[in-house]
Length: 138
Image 1 (spheres, one colour):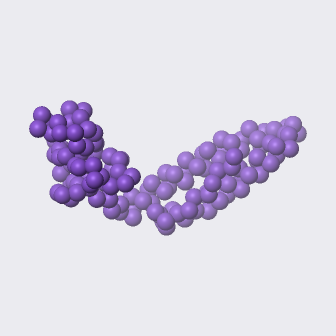
Image 2 (image 1 turned 120 degrees about the horizontal axis):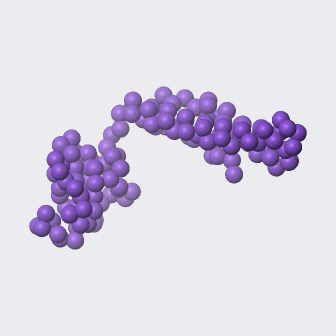
Image 3 (image 1 turned 180 degrees about the vertical axis):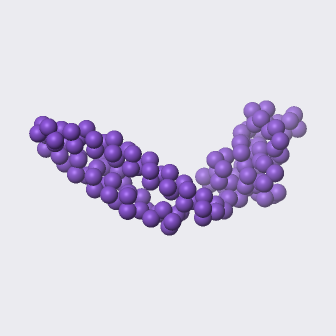
């Protein structure tokens, strides 16, 4: 690792070329069962992070092509999460309405969150990754 102490970004990648970690200090990479190489600053793609979406092709960092099934699975998780967030916002607002104790603002928020939850529920996750997710109410 000493020869990698050159001020350049170091990447550690798996045998399938998937970049798992990166940093300027090679000693912090924990490269067990991984290959490590240095990358010049000019060759680091914009938006690069070691988040499982980048690969090393032997010469440079390239975006990973994510299989459709994986995109659908991620979209399904995101959809379920957004529905849970909406439901958690709706429940106390609905309680206030049911008890006849809701303010005008609570009624407005309830309607916005219910609309949002319906919009999220209608999302077809098989269209991933080309999904336009609705904005959450504020």
